[in-house]
Image (cartoon, rainbow, N blue to C red; front, side, top):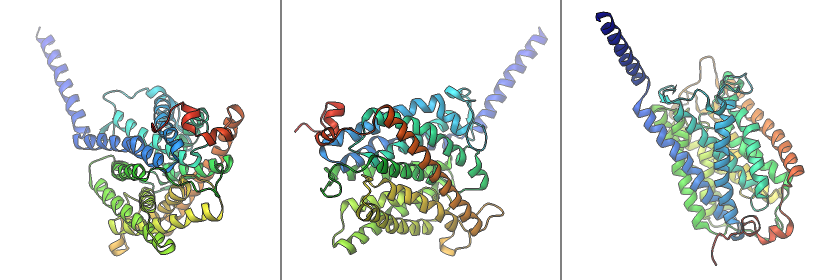
Length: 430
């Protein structure tokens, strides 16, 4: 009897010690912050990006854009559970993860990722996987078949997003080289921007572009969505610290400064060139500032964030004018010049402003053995590698989808509008 009691006591003590160890590993503060950040990043896509893009298209296509963002959220969520999380964060090799976490095998209630539950990490990363293909919608808005959009977006997440995420954040070769990409300059913005450019080139311009004006149908909606993006981006960047700590606080501050500087700089560029600042220019500059600071946000200080925002507003403004007005490429909602160019610019500038020896512009410092020259070199390699792979893979996927389903609606359907012929509904009851 005594032996039995001792055994029972031992099991109870072991259980209490196990619970205590789990409690020590799990940080309530970190977990609460990443749960909040997860909601903020999902809020960026639905409703933020949906309303921003929806307001920028013509009235006959507003519902189609909202539907595309909503449907992408659903498709990517299922694929993330089944396959893509494992491809991105499974051990695998330097180029792609393995299938050890197929169907999220091993992700249990007690599983941990650092100081937060692994389930929270999975969900947080999912929100990044959702918004990336949703950004691409702006490159083919108002002319792609809904069925083709679904198939392309699903394949793209598997073939492009999963591997590139593994390269940078999943233990892959770019991460091992020391690439600084705090929240997705290469993983999100370069890949989405380059994919949108390839879509625009492969599909060709909308009927009437550039001769016929195609102004946004509802700037109130677009500005509302843009405001949601600004707020949600705090979860995007500060949440990428994966903890409620100093890195998160500095990332939030740098993010806000860059967004404000980007908006103001774009507005000034318009004012000087065209005589008047526009609301569209201000919100587009804000998004440029946010996308450009994303890779650098956890590595630079607030003054560095300000400079990056000014650079974003100026460079992305001129890139947009070059692409649309000079080259005549119908990247409908300016995804490449804002996200692609901005993401590349911010990734490279992270190699400069992360330096701890720039006085008031100093950042958090480089990893041991890195100099500004070597770090910037790694940053350039990261941009070129992610852009090149994305361009090739996106082109191949588009051609496959075009052969199987056909990418583009007919000319008559485009004239009628996608709301009616793709969904048999209207965005507004006029």
